[in-house]
Image (tube, rainbow, N blue to C red):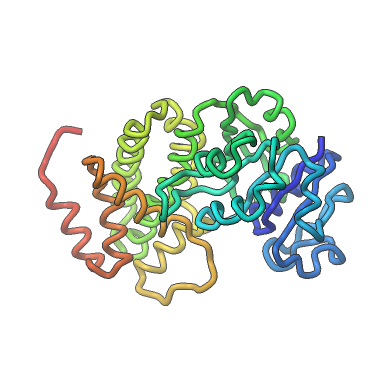
Length: 315
């Protein structure tokens, strides 16, 4: 079965490499492929990892029509427009979202965007604790694949180093993948500002409680948040500088200039989820403080004081 990966950032490239290592027919498309086809390597986004022989670099996105399974490794905030632009190519295909977040304009997650934009397609989500360099290097990685009746898809996308666990709870998986980025920014801010490891542990724990509250609001299964795409991804993302969201928070906390041109999905997701939580009347103080710091409405010191001065309550 032919598989296409659309989006040649580090993660999309790593997935294509891992899938092709097993000899599958895999194609990789980039909006700007540069010299990937001739260099047989993504020198800009994932240097040092040669492409397997069975990995084909697509010149035209129209060539995706030959693939039944399409992995969407495009930034979350561009997913809706990307699908709308190319909807005719995706009829009756299985579309696997590999991005994590909530669309700022609509408040939708990737599965809902796929359903509404490409109604004949089968939506799926691939999420969990993973870094592109680990996947490309062949290091063992476990991920969650969310798809209704997804047993065949699970077999098609499992590789020698990627072990997939299957669930039908698309909502829970997309919420876990989205909200852990917000908590990661908060944890990065705490460490960057010198607030200590205990503060990070508190933010991770209370951030996880916020994730559970929001998931319950959206009808997700509680056990999904305790799995790889929730607790597992939260643990990795909040504890490693390989995480773009955590590193972004570190930079904020240290007061250093913010890097340009880096996709930090948690920025938009924090604003989207804070708006949705406020309208639904559920408490998400960590997400709200992240937004306040990002919008320069509060200093880091003021945000910490606000969190610590909240009314005392039972855990």
